[in-house]
Image (cartoon, rainbow, N blue to C red):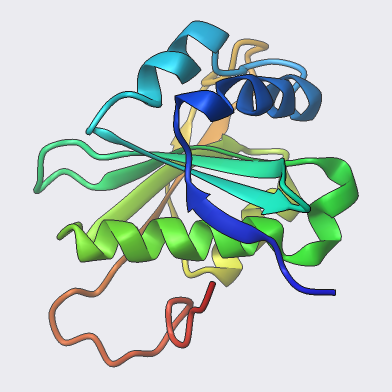
Length: 165
């Protein structure tokens, strides 16, 4: 089975992204209004993964002024597509685009209790840099993670090596 097609999201994808957010997260969702806003901003990079023409996953990255790091704002994949490397492909593409735009680091936040999700990010090279007390709406702690995109002296090793989509 071939992998998903990845492309930059546009405003026409808003309803599909909103539906994925609602299905994948029980709290701390990005609001529909904010999703629509981000899809039209140069300071956000939004990607979708499509299978047979349907959006099955999305990733939104924020692009602040450098030297601040890029930020993974949301990553969501429909449950029935989670064993097909959709999330990894979205992340590799997002990180490659951040690197191409001159970002040297990328950060994200994740629930402290989300061990499998944290392990996924660690496999991509992210490392814990801070514990965030009471970060989520329900009071759970978060963990801030960071990845060096190694713009200078890049050896081609790591999660971006050989990335194809």
